[in-house]
Length: 350
Image (cartoon, rainbow, N blue to C red; front, side, top):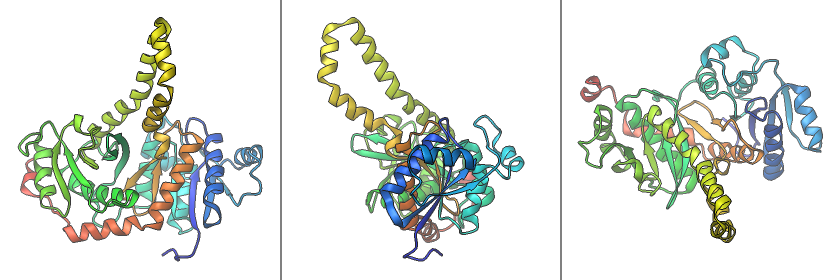
């Protein structure tokens, strides 16, 4: 177990992402300068490239470690196969540091499937967790909502969604200081009888859990902030995530189109520029840094492939919070307190 007074050690995959290694190294530099001496960062990847970027950023004085790895898992590679075939990849080597207790957390903007597969293979699952889930923050009228799963599990059982609710509730409460976050189950109607077999069965389990369960919510309720934690399977969650990512560019293009053909719209756009700036900030994934893979026996943060240095810096902050507040231990305790549900009759019917 990590001593209370020791540094928080975070391993970063320096080769993952569309703009690696520059954006990753630049983000690590921002984070090291922001979090100071109680954080120890290790960049894993091509040592020559990483050190060249550090020199270009005049960061030679910073206590950032560099570990060489000879392989890189590309974005288009098949996840599990690439992890097996490339044991010296930056993803696998960086996660291995955590397995050997040489780091406390891992961050990557690389191949999401490979990060998930490697996290499972190298670190394993928390006790009683059936399937890990990826949690992503969405802006709402009331602040932010955590949606999970957004891509780790295309097919789920009610037991999985039940555990997502418990894990998401713990994570949200620790990140935002909300002791009793509202948990909503995404469905096609508010009534408990609405939805497919999965949502109906999940509603029964979530209703019996030690949760502030708000019942079913619909897609339109997410951005309204009707729930702090929104539960769904990874197939639905990933579609929602990709749709949300398109909103910023869609709204921007609509404004630009009107400005080009309408003088009044151009004047209005100038007047509303501060509001547009705030809107863009609310929709920017970089504000949250990355998405935690909850349920892993360790800390694994998955960042957007187009992550900026700011996003990487914020991902380091997210990893620090997970380590400092011992979120995994809290998840295990919550699962134990609520029992490890065996497949019930409602699940067996799926």
